[in-house]
Length: 399
Ligand SMILES: C[C@@]1(CC(=O)O)c2cc3[nH]c(cc4nc(cc5[nH]c(cc(n2)[C@H]1CCC(=O)O)[C@@](C)(CC(=O)O)[C@@H]5CCC(=O)O)C(CC(=O)O)=C4CCC(=O)O)c(CCC(=O)O)c3CC(=O)O
Ligand SMILES: [Co+2]
Image 1 (cartoon, rainbow, N blue to C red):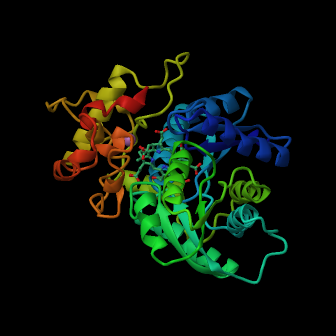
Image 2: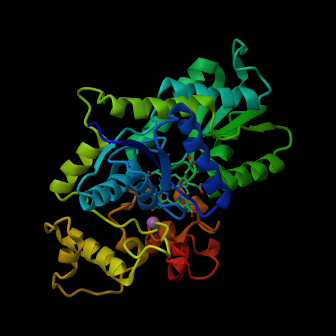
Image 3: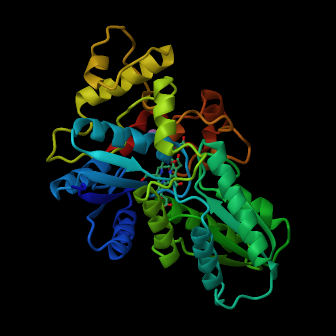
């Protein structure tokens, strides 16, 4: 008897309700490709359903074998650490369940073609019948930005590929946060190249706070420079080639054909877990289902998070069993800042103080969880931009 199969898409989540709604389009698109298999989705942070809820829904439909794919463009902290952590915790509690985790979307041809189609469409051009070149135009790709250097480099690689495929005069990459250059400063620098037409193309799946913030920056720069034509390309959304790319990722785990010679994301996670480089953690901003007391940010979860960070700093071994961890008896200061309490899920980025980087976004309503990564020296230097004491509102995004 073969086990009943189900597909799980693990998305990012956002406090923006439009983002939450739009992500459902991926599941809808995949459902059409797999009409006989349950397809569910869940979010890592802020939004409902969370991943745990999506997995439970599959269990309730009798599923015993889950093919889980990251709804992530690149492999950074979320795809490498946070999603495997949630999946592993869930799988360990279900005796008859088998969860296989696939790969991030990555730079598949389908993703590149979807992105190029969005860019052509935004310029009023037919992707099926493109012009020979676009030498008079500058392309600015906006990547998410992460503390993961490889993932940032993949975004830069995307820019190079699209630049050569489409024949722009020039192209460069800016990032929506965490790394450098940030969008506003990056755009102002690139304008010095003198192009009269600039296409700003965000490499994002869906709308959300970041897309809206990026649009705000571009509007501001465009207003200040009326002689330049700015074109804002829409995000990828559920372009049919994006759904193709998801389907490819599902197919390769269903058929057990992850590329040979490449360590899978789950294998890598388990290896680093065993080595003590990462830990199983409750993602700090995960949506909490008020109906379900087996999950969520209970008081003990908070203590658990602090304990983890504590034990992490001191480098001891700890087991999968959270409760065992909670009983360890080291006394330590409970006045951790929010940034410290989940330092395991996003480490301090080494270029946080870069003159073209994240510091340029201080004072623009950036999440305080992120603000918590700035050193006191940087906050002191940028003091004039800060309205009130930001560090005090560090927990603001939990609710
Ligand atoms: C606005 C915010 C949520 C809010 O406040 O509502 C938000 C939103 C979104 N992020 C998205 C994607 C990614 N976010 C990350 C990483 C981080 N994101 C974080 C914070 C925030 N992210 C909030 C405030 C930030 C601010 O104010 O600047 C960090 C700092 C903290 C943390 O997450 O714990 C952490 C740094 C970790 C580190 O590197 O150290 C990565 C990279 C990675 O995996 O690491 C990817 C790409 C994954 C991929 O490759 O696809 C998408 C989907 C976009 C899409 O559709 O494509 C949305 C939705 C939206 O825009 O709303
Ligand atoms: Co955080």
